[in-house]
Length: 217
Length: 255
Image (tube, rainbow over all chains, first blue to last red; front, top):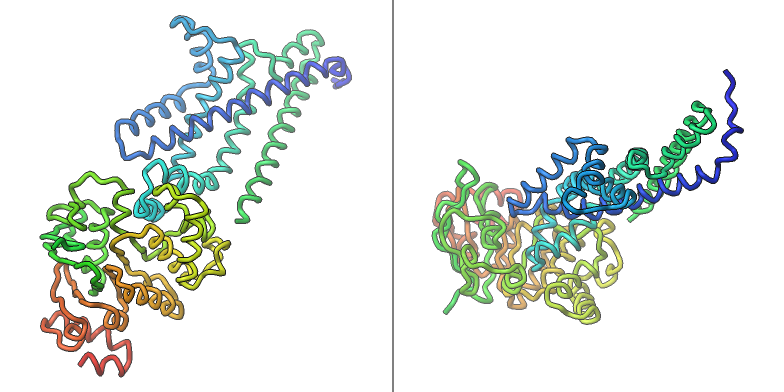
């Protein structure tokens, strides 16, 4: 069998759009997931126990169920409650919520990695719990967390391929469309895989740079 | 008159391990007391209970009439009463020296940046680190870090300063600078409670020395009495053991 990638050339503009959708979805997903995850993780270490257990349950469910089912629940399930979301919103929401569970655990680990003496010093200087969290603990924790959050971003780039089940035209969906007209299945999906690999590599590299810069101080 | 610190029959245990077994103690305004005693005697725990860093089992703790163990008090309010210096300095590593000192006055007291930084500069000057304001904690020696921590605590202008073994984590050659700063502070009239292993220092700066062992205050009194004429066998044994390290000059006085 001979591989002929030239059949894909006429569809490059479609692939490009798909790449943009994939990048957008995973970026917004990780952004939303991180923002939410920082709160989840912060609540997770709070002295106030009920909130702590609630967050533990939230993380437990999100990490223990498939992303695809979570996406289905948001996109096909929520309308039963009168909440209708378009596919893109539902997709980003789903990815973000799913990611917040993982980021929450990363944040918790990062926070717990900051020495207890930092809390004590801040308390003796009169800082409240949230002042301490925001100005003392999280800035230090984020440095410990950055590599893990970077991995989460890379994971999301790959997992966003599930958005195709909501008929969102991400890179994977475009691949399926191109395959259905060219019948060049192998070429199409090898190409799609290479593009994903490029995306994750560039992301990893950029995060590595960022991490090294932050380490200097 | 209200005491600066008043501790009544304080009990504290960690699990089955009794650490403080009925400690009572008063510190008056302007008084400098040092607490000495073997490791595990409960002296650090005593300071940490006063600072509300440990929950107590029973007893009462008052600082300027405020019931520390029962009153619902914000950290901001507590910072007006107590400042604390830790064995491990606990500087904020992501902030510069200046920011370490100026942050809490801004965030807690609502001071302007200019005002807070001015005070911070003066305090850093006072502890001999006026040239290090832009440095980060990791670039400083332990002794310098501890002096920044002292400036940071002073920036909140507390009524009482607690020192929890301020020089125990320092290399021997760095201890002197820190002790000098603390001694200056003692002379300035600050009310202070110092947990320490530095016997010479305790003898020199204290108005009163408290000897603790096994969760009790065994003996307390003027430094000359405690170091010169200890009444209790336990105190004598401890001082003999500790002071033998200091060489002839000190053991002469301890005799």
